[in-house]
Length: 255
Image (cartoon, rainbow, N blue to C red; front, side, top):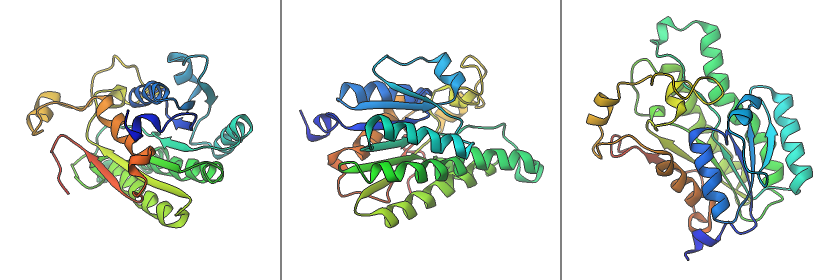
């Protein structure tokens, strides 16, 4: 067994957005590696995707600052700290050129994909400071730098996540490591609007055939493609990494 496979033993991990496609896969994989896991997500998401009894659930709307503060207070009371925090919070909106986006829609996208990251990070840090070899991993997107028309507001928010990650990494070293993953499209409900915001049977907001043809590895990403790099960043094998971004895109973008 490698260091990374054994590193989860008894470590306390909170996953914001743990009911989503990537989140569910991450929770299962982390538990297999011995992590104690808490899932923070919308009440409707927890209802649609109930977790096992040994997973600690906290219902929270991450766009509501008071709910985020209360959620992490529950975690602190439950565990007395955190060793890992993964922030998967975010959603995709209908594609629109920037000139056509109404300000309320812009605010919704930026708040839901960036402001939530700030609020949750701020609430998680005091718990991580009480942990052992603590690590935070934020979910950005390849669109943060690999710009495509129609995704402007989302791209701006996810670029902000990278800047937020790097700033947190500098400001909280050496106590807490902070890194990010930046996937391309992943075959989950996210492509249909997001878990808790849409049906997982809705149409995908993407021409999959054209998309796959543009990927050197000739397939769309699946949740394990993202989960394994997240677990790497949480574990001891990444102990000398902070402020970094792992681009997960099948070769479509090579920064």
